[in-house]
Length: 245
Image (tube, rainbow, N blue to C red):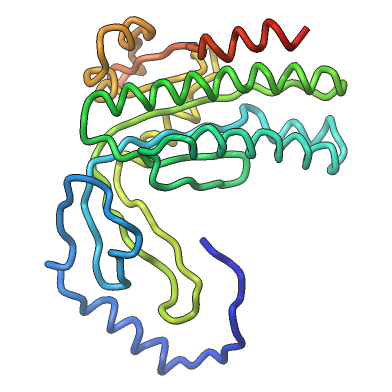
């Protein structure tokens, strides 16, 4: 959420109570279905849109341990390199409509009305995985610790709303729904305890083409079937072989 304070403001409980009423009394019919992600400008503080999206999360495995190995300036450079290139790869996709950074986690929301769009998100995960390989080469050269990551992807229905304080300039888009929580949960399992770097839900897997499906293997977590893989982008891997010696 945007945190820059735009102007001075004195809090008044009466104004606060009035704003609560305005929000809570909004018509439920203002929340409607959309076939694709609408523009941010379509959102107000009183409406929202239900839309089917694909969410991808990537985070650093064991990031808390890194504070024991490096001084803060070094950590800052490592985090910035990771976050910068995750955002660059995700943002390069036209279907990506939202990017968020939470600590060492980067996640994006993709407009995926067609099955082929979900295959494109899988390609994004391959590029992210290949980027980490390049980053680790550069970290080794600096004698910094290498990093490992987990990537989670899910598809489903989300509610898109604008949240914040009307008139303050402090607001952001909030994505509510199981798809975001599930992708985050898959990310937290990926690359850990013997799991592969990328984990996708069965819904994502079932919407992939045959080639993309062949890159993943199934496993059960005791509750449902998930699919995991360690795929890379071939052109980025060729660049790595030529330039990271």
